Image 1 (cartoon, rainbow, N blue to C red):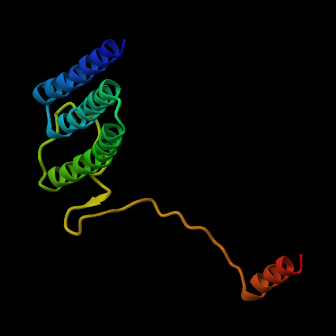
Image 2: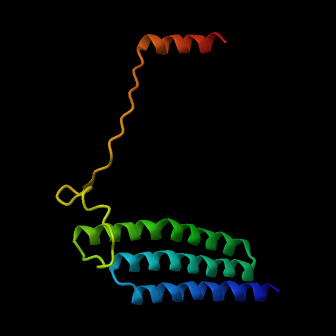
Image 3: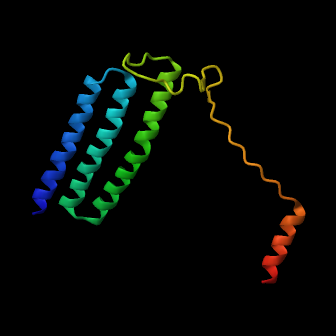
Length: 140
């Protein structure tokens, strides 16, 4: 039974890896290609490592595989983000079918800073108010 579960997980993992490769070849620009490569290959590698855990059923392989899964799931999105940011800074052309560039007016290409909506919260608390609250908590 374990062999069947392992086989299914390996086939699913290979399928997602295939989809990642297909996405890299078929998608029109670097940003959509990166999306396909990151999402599908991370999921495919995760499924293959889970198949490894299921097949060998040893504690050391469990720990090692889980660490690799965690490493992939943390590093792949960060690497994809950095590559996307570098591509945007280098003004790599986006697909002509892209409807809106959300960063166009918010990203400063000279300072490399992203401007966001300013949200201010007015909080006026005097030192006297803070002392009163602290004293009340201490008495209880």
